Amino acid sequence: MEQVSSTGRPVQITVTEGYDLKGFKGDTSVTFIRAEFNQVVLGDSAKITVSPEGTAKYNFTCSFEFNPEGGGIALDDLAHKPVFLTVTEVLPKEKKQKEEKTMVLGQAVVDLLPLLEGESSFETMVPLHPVPGSPIEPFRSGVKQCSLEVKVFVAEPLLTPAQISGGNLLKVTLEAAYSVPESFLPIGPLQNYMVGMQVPSAGEKDYPIFFKNGTLNGNHVEAKACYERTISFVVDASEMHFIFLRLGQIYLEEKEYEKAKKTYLQACKRSPSCLTWLGLGIACYRLEELTEAEDALSEANALNNYNAEVWAYLALVCLKAGRQLEAEQAYKYTMKLKLKDENLLAELHMVQETVGFGNPSF
Image (cartoon, rainbow, N blue to C red; front, side, top):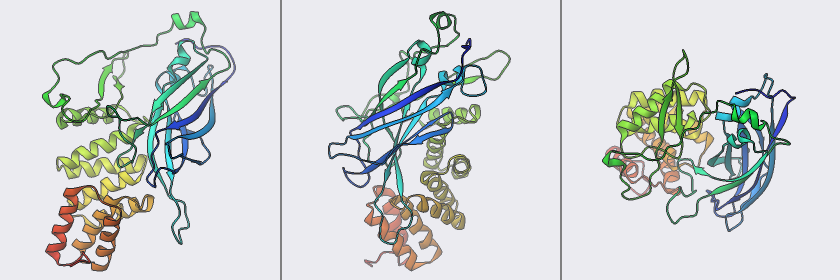
């Protein structure tokens, strides 16, 4: 696309309010927003208390500079790189706790494409997609979806009408899907799917295009192949964190523990989080690599000690290692945090019965 000859121009992003928010610690949770673009943190909002109705008035503004003459953010970046808005809850401090604990609730995506269509400002209501384990309700029919109200502003249009009409911006619209597998049929909860296609560029490798609105559910064969191709094509995409998490989970569900371990290791190196370390810990535990499992689970616990699944696997590791006191302590936290995975809880009770300890009620 033809570049505009002018000096750098600030692109301003303002998050005014959040709606229908829910936190780990009740309706009046304290949250903040982190804005990122082009793998750079643009800033954090002030810590705002969510009202009992689920509303948070952030009035948070950040910006980055668009440089049409090169040396920074260019038109191509605006065309295919969205702004990521991550909503994080600040958990109340416990006794003797020195550092503040936080937990990610969800992430929203703001597409900047209208700026390349002649707009100098626009407003949008973007859905907040929950991370695994978040108390935020995923999108379902009849349920209010958590969302953020966002405004984007530039002082003047980035492109003239002539430049817009003469540009080479490619638009792809997914209208319908035909002959879908039976597992895709809308039976039970509403499901979202991810679609990918490859667009060839002259003399180079193919580039993938993604229609992002959730994950591919129901058919692990197609889903796994899609995610594996994604990882092989994309190297530095900021959304790869969630791709690694989903692919690793599929490997765990299919008992491909070596592949799960390798996938979560990559995720831990790129963007470590409680969930990446938890996945690595689960894979190592299933491979009976107890020392590595405990190391990974301890890292997960350090990032978020409110995750019941982390405590459950720590309890399993301690049971297998014969450490009764630690196994009971981890089990107490598992029950206090109300582990929802019934199969994992049943496994934990079975191992407790086998070794003869680990449950204080024995």
